[in-house]
Image 1 (cartoon, one colour):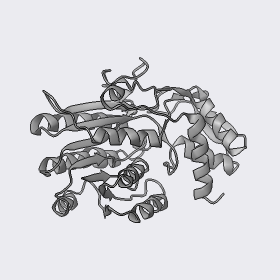
Image 2 (tube, helix red, strand yellow):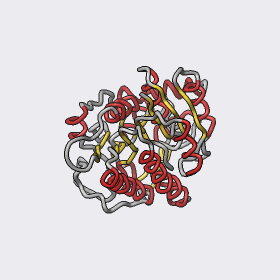
Image 3 (tube, one colour):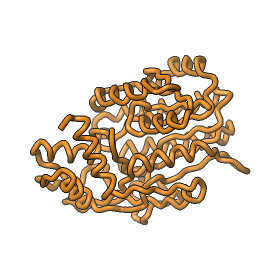
Amino acid sequence: MTYLVTGAAGFIGFHTCLRLLGRGEVVVGLDAVNDYYDPALKEARLAILNERPGFTFHRVDISDREAMAGVAVQHPEITRIIHLAAQAGVRYSLINPYAYTRSNIEGHLVMLEFARRLQACEHFVYASSSSVYGTNTKLPFAVEDRVDTPVSLYAATKKANELMAHSYSHLFSIPTTGLRFFTVYGPWGRPDMSAFLFVKAILSGQPIHVFNGGDMRRDFTYIDDIVSGVVAVVDRAPSGEGTPYRLYNIGNHRSEPLTRFISLIEQALGKTAEIIFEPMQPGDVKETFADITAIQRDHGFSPTTNIEQGIPRFVEWYRSYHKI
């Protein structure tokens, strides 16, 4: 079985590739390795993947139609696609919106066309986001809830991804599944995410900035649990009558206070954070909380790592990676 993983040098993509390779699969990885955050971290992830048997890498921008056509010619054997490449970050979408339309809209369309023309393709799994829930106030967020009030361009592009995938499933019978990720953290995580930002600042004696006066809650989900869900889903395509299209929340099913998250980081570091409280940021939401009933029912997804376990593991990796 040959899997295509886009965003292979990214946080979730890297771990997904490792899991697939660990069970003996053949993996074709794609990534543009852009400079949204330090490319050295992406290159370090790639160096590990390139040492693994069964892994092939192409440095490709998914919105480049000609380059993607070339990948299709080289790898007609691809049977399953895990499309994780995207321009991430809510706040950055306020600064550079065109990066989101290029990667998340144009790039997603190119990937759907890639799947359409790949004769062996059995399943197209792609990353959506909990950000699509926007101004929803009913908790926990369920996949059946309406998601037509996004509060950031990033969220709007992810909702667009879901609509585009549905149209391709309907028109061309391509089995597609969207995964709404909830605040993923863990070793090799992104430098723009809270765990990385907080640990870096505390260790360097810098203050951390906490929004909405600290009154925030997140469904923090450990990377190993996320990957278990991704792999379980990709191995079982939608079937039965009707359009072969599914959406799932993939979270820890626990809404944790941000202050608790910070406290555990302080404990793991043995240092106290200097906190500067800030107002709510544009595009942000106060709380996220995943209803994971659907993915539990259909794929047996059951997260096992709470933040009391996950944060020390992240801190241990951070110290090791930065030689602290």
